Image 1 (cartoon, helix red, strand yellow):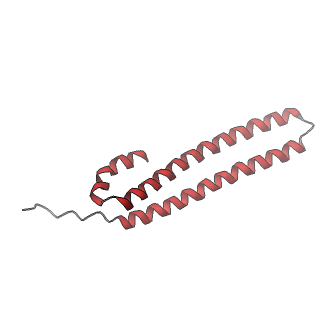
Image 2: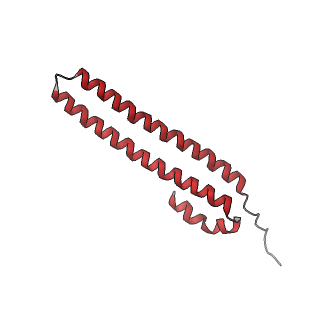
Image 3: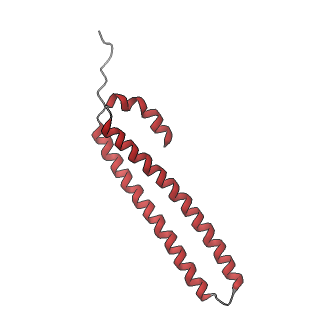
Length: 112
C-alpha cells in the first residue's frame, strides 16, 4: 500500500540538453575574456609606443593594464571551474542510473 502519488523517475535528457547549452555559453564567456586580455595587451602596446617619451604615464599604464589583466584572469578561472563542473555533471548523467545520480545531486549543487 502506497500513500500519495508515486515519484516519477528522473528524466535526464532535458537536464543534459540544458547543461549542454549552459556549457556552450560558458565557452563563449571564456573566449570573450581571452579576447579582452588580448585587446588590453594590444592597446597597452600602442599606448607605450605613443607615450614613449613620457615614462611616468607608461608606469601608470602598466599598473592599469596589470590590474585589468589580473581581474580578467580571475573571472576566467571562475568560468573555467564552472565549465568543468558542468562537463562532469553531464558525464555523470550519461553514465549513472537516475537513482544513483539523485543521491549525489546535493553534492553537485553544492559545488556550484
